[in-house]
Amino acid sequence: MSEFRIPQGVVAVADYEPHARARLSDAAWAYLSGGAADELTLRWNREAFDRIRLKSRVLGAFDGGGTGVTLFGQDFDHPILLAPVAHHRLACQEGEIATVIGAGGARAGMVVSTEADVALEQVAREARMPVWFQLYIQHDRGFTRDLVARAEAAGYGALVLTVDAPVTGARDREARAGVGPGSFPAPANLSGLAARPPAQAALGESLLFRGFLDTAASWRDVAWLRSLTRLPVLLKGIMAPEDAEHAIAEGADGIVVSNHGGRVLDTLPAAIEALPAIARAVAGRVPVLMDGGIRRGTDVLKALALGAAAVLVGRPYMHGLAVAGPAGVAHVVQILRAELEMAMVLTGCRRLEDIGPHVLFDTPSPAGGRGLG
View (cartoon, rainbow, N blue to C red):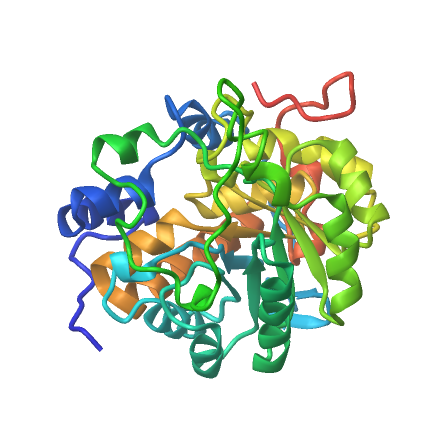
């Protein structure tokens, strides 16, 4: 394992970011930290949390308290999971192996990307906490079926189907840094996947709509995937209550409210702003998770107060990975967990089950959601 060190003065998650920028190439930084187009959604993900205020409570009883949570029959010490991020070797030579070791050190679950630089079986062998597998439906459905079987055989505890990126967003920052097809090594898990057939279109027709999207995933694929596996299936990338309803109808076991970290469609609202309406629509039928913009333990508390059962973090742990390897990953999660515990005590919450809208200072909006402005 490469030599890493947590720099002096790193006491908050955001403190890792400048150190990571100094270590990463322009291309790697653009890929890991950039968003789509003008990066408004990327910025709003963070700013929306800042607008939510908390209500403190005093003299609570905290005996027997804690941050444990059970999801799909799997026990977690806290509700902070590592989100799926591709190409960990951009940040650390050992790639996802270093990340999953750090996750184990922080007692955090990890969602491993289809586009990981290390084969899913190798990552699972190093896991000390539950690992889930993030899945893209490939144009070759047989290859997709084999990926699912591999994840099951390797001991993954759930499948997280990303549904919000049938096409890549306008990644202007990446383009300016020279990132394009072939810039990074091919994902280890996609070895053997035949190239997508070239799109065919008549002169003047759109290649996107007349060819490329012919093999894109659809709702039919959700039911098909559900029929393939005994594992829980979560749909990641839900931003509309209607899609959450459809997902449950097709057999989804969980929902992840996410705008893909602002990397696909710019000017979507912040994920935390979409969460309350989706949580109301789901009404406890399946667990709802969320990601996007979490940088403080208070953000975790706010997400849980607005209906999330757990959260996923992405860029922060990648910054920790780039700076301090497994120790950096573990440290990022430990910071967030410690801040969550402090916020729980100061808002009068002994357990995660005690967290609800009452910890928020802002009054409910007339529509039943919470005023985030």
